[in-house]
Length: 276
Image (cartoon, rainbow, N blue to C red):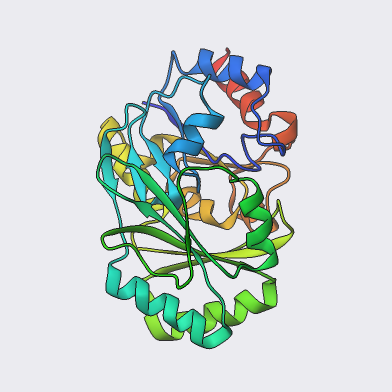
């Protein structure tokens, strides 16, 4: 059974974080034929906000793969960073570079989310927080800490050279007990370092979705633009990079689409592949 998974930001969403009427029509028509869902760094509440007019008929891969949940909000899989490890990581970053992260997690297993942010932010963090003004999930901390139980990801945002040095330092301390992903942040022009449970990435989450749908990862066509999509590219039967994808993502793709996210690249592919 063919199935389709797409990244959101800079892949399916337009750069203004919207879904075009054309993409909406193609998606909802395609979803009558095949499993169709998303694999994103976004949380459940943000995905629901962005995609409220789309028919989602397969589990959602959220927070870079740390959480897999059905559109009806039934938890399929969760990969968390334990409190001791999370606090040790945050303290290490503070000691090495006096830098504080965002901490994203769950307040409870009803999937009520929290977005912890530090009192002292970097310029990039400050820009991101402008988009979350009034968001009830926000919690300000003078001294950042991991959640007591369900820390899903820890995110640093700063200049590239600063985060390259921090990534190397944290990897030297924590090795493969955590997953580190350093990527450009195209909205602010900076970089971000996402720290996850070692099995909390999109590739492992995609395997969970395949199990849920009782199909094989090779049945999937996936779409992406950034380094956190590369694990899915390795597993999928067909990996598609949008025209605006990073060079390393294009190099790993089976197909480089001729259109960008702002030109509805994913919808154009679905329309042609599924004759919708």
